[in-house]
Picture: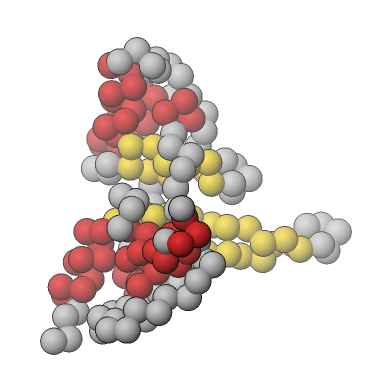
Length: 165
């Protein structure tokens, strides 16, 4: 059951990590990873166009974000291609038909330790930054902006380049 799984509890913010022998990088913030700006697709982009854009720009995956800023999920090149080839999607379908809506988010201010826990189960995490926005009437709301996509390779590259042994 998930409630007795410490990694799940940490990943979902129900438990602070209590690992005794943390590596040197454990408490460093995600913002130190120096991620490049993500390629973002709008939901109306067709599967065909998504494949072309990802291949042309050299990306394997991209977040799908509505104009409102709502993060709808993640699209991968391999899933889009396999869905079209298997007949589960058409080239003309919107990319939302092949978008993964199960994904983890992590904030820029959170630790690489928490990121490490997320990446033990997920192939990637969407890095978000919360921003306060105001309407014309003066009311405010928090909006999440996609700052990047991080993979285990990004974490490994950071650790190996900055190893403090």
